[in-house]
Length: 120
Image (cartoon, rainbow, N blue to C red):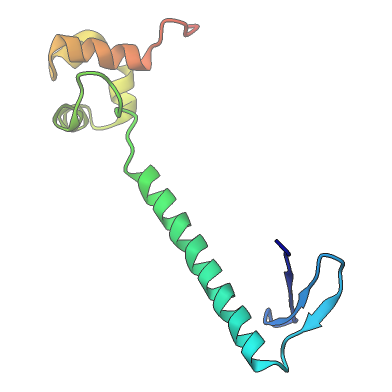
């Protein structure tokens, strides 16, 4: 598949294409080609921006409490409401966690933040 680069002018407008060999092909005077390249450029920007926004919105909805066995959305909400921050949840002992969620879930949360191979 041949790949061409876009050559921009000093106002960041596409003025030519460049071949893999480095030869420039002017497109400003050929309206149909200029229009097609502009549409490709717009679609490329739209795709990149959409991907960027989707990837950031997904990471914004993740929680450090995700994936803990026995801790679903309701228990995550209870922990966040009671402790206020993830840091406070992380620093709580099993007894403090068990005051909010069942002991098995409290143990799972504590173990999630304190893995056995952690050097403390």
